[in-house]
Length: 488
Image 1: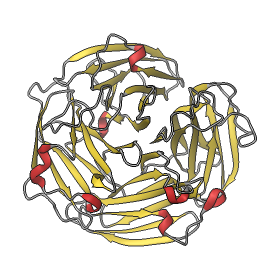
Image 2 (image 1 turned 135 degrees about the horizontal axis):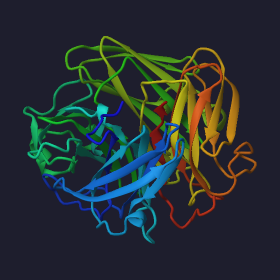
Image 3 (image 1 turned 120 degrees about the horizontal axis):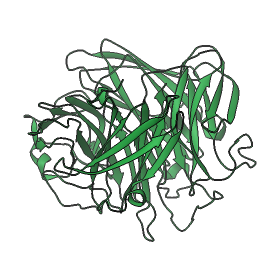
Image 4 (image 1 turned 180 degrees about the vertical axis):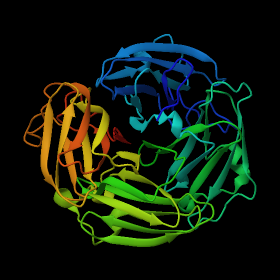
């Protein structure tokens, strides 16, 4: 699953999206995010093996120069959170790429936030680290924005190769919702040095000749091409009106015939979701079916590279409200492989016209397993709690158990086929009496099924009044962070 290096370690590529002040200037290749904020990142690593792991995190600057190596040891089944500014105070402010090398199999996620300063914006996002085996020369991004209902986006691309001194040349192609290519010629993004990261915002001058749509038509898919070495990447999506908010999702290097959406919302405590599906075949059409957990289906066809978005509140056949408005979906395709992204928001019309900043995205998983690794779970931890949404992808009921790295367990029984178990880690109170974690904690966990039914899961971090460390002065704000769990 991981590539082996000359030191017999396992490698994981991580894009640290930003550790710096932002800039809205138009650069051909920028070194920081275009999203406003004062950012810091935390790297969350889980050792999913039973043996102790020797880890090192190598940080690279924009030239691909290794500027710091952070070593640590992680016992089998344990996790560690490395808050970069405090753990590595000698690392200068800036944007970096990072590579985690380990003697055992590990998984990682990154949380980046701009929430600690006195004045806003107070925003946060999360995404998964990329297995080195999942890097490739072409990376697909199904949902990109250019002033789309006030949203913009940027590509953060990492060269995962550490040997080619000449780096790699990047180009980009863009496609509208029908699969029609937008740009007449590939957009040149210049050279990306070995092991380095660059950021390309849709507002940057490099895209001026691409003919990208803007305004409420400014939604499109993209493919970033590397000429010579494997790359990985994320997309950051942000808005500043009516308040600041930001989300992130991972680019995909391959599609699948089946996808899962473990957490969709329709007026669920004021939240709504949208599911975007893209055909990543350049030659064949895909016949696609979305089956929601209440049995409702949506059928459609996607031309090569085409994408289509489904906003759950627009479907009157779906359940709604605080009781039934959280549900799952399974997406199947024939004829061509697909990828998917889910985005959450808290629209004003679902919240008594109040402005709420909450916004996040996650990648729809394509691989289900009887055990799923949860690399980071928070319970009253610095103002955060976590909801783990675990989908039973099987057709028969199953019991789903979270087993924490400290040995505690939490079981939910008789979860229906295609149903979801929500493990909401608020303090032990009237809304979450079953949470076995007491006091502020940050731990990892493994979700498992009682009868080997296959599972998928997403992890959602948020805060709410009543959680230790929450400050109502930082409102409206976007503390919501969502990312996808990993098949074990």
